[in-house]
Length: 142
Image (cartoon, rainbow, N blue to C red):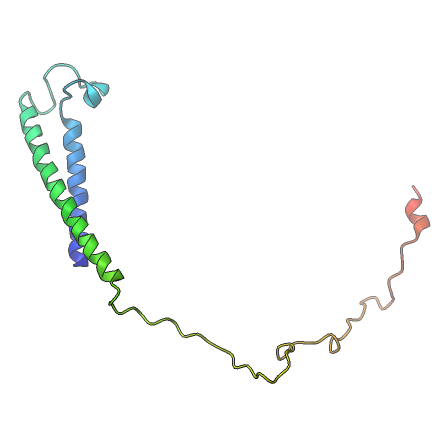
């Protein structure tokens, strides 16, 4: 069903493009788009003088195909959607949840391997001497 949907969608897009092109090459009845691009003068067209009837007929046929394909695509899409959201349909199982067993009698504490403040080792100063406070007299000199 899904492959048929995509085939119909491809045909629908092609019909849409053909319909747009058919409408654009027609002679404008009251000016419109044809006269905006310089095609508003006389009964002459690129395809001859009597193409208006043929183009009108072709546009009507392509429009009918457009409507039929639009209705079919709507029905196919609705069936596909209902198949995916049906309440009785088998849903994929949820992913497993990992749990950590907890001893209810144990007191809360740091996680295993974490250092507590009593276990922290001091970092020695790389210079070996403690840092001295800056001299206030040296800071005030220009």
